[in-house]
Length: 245
Image 1 (tube, rainbow, N blue to C red):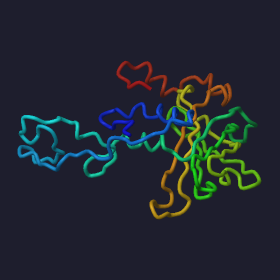
Image 2 (spheres, helix red, strand yellow; image 1 turned 30 degrees about the vertical axis):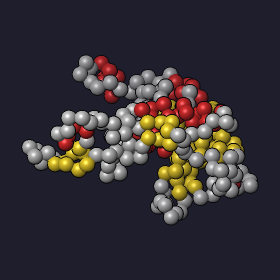
Image 3 (cartoon, one colour; image 1 turned 180 degrees about the vertical axis):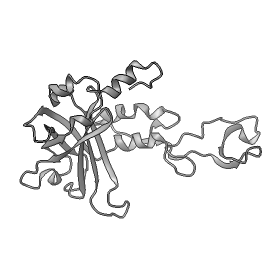
Image 4 (cartoon, rainbow, N blue to C red; image 1 turned 30 degrees about the horizontal axis):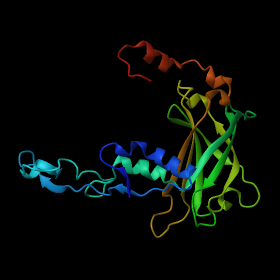
């Protein structure tokens, strides 16, 4: 049956449905209504600009307005933002944060942080995650300040995880506090799984799943949690014409 409607922002609560499906074995999804907008190519005679026509654009008195513009993609199959949301909710690999703490500091003013995550395969049939590559980055205020490296263990590590199984993985991030803007509350560990090799349906490097895990700034050390605004940021805060940080 149809359980989600893609008109406007109607897929905004889509993740709630899938949390329900994951928690209740007798609940399952159905169809999103629908895949593509049913607009027709038209050219505005006054401006010469292209637009997708629907509803009353054809001088008909009775019509359903925009009720045929309810797809995940435009009529030319360009993705709507909602398609990116659906892709994220349908991700075949998920990650949960188990712990985050400061670690021994490396040289040259850098910081080192240690994370433990649980990587879970949502695949039903694939025997492993060997077809994927993983990149991890630490983001502060929307800026990547360091890259994480999984500490591989025996038995193939996270790539050996089977269908509907999971494993715990330790990550180490070496990061530069000088790159961090004054937004200590906006700290995320970003993980991206991509195809290691070209497949029949996508090129190598295609993003299969991406997850952002919120990190407590205090877990990175007091030097970030208590960091004062850099001079440039402080000047912007004092200027009434400055854009908000």
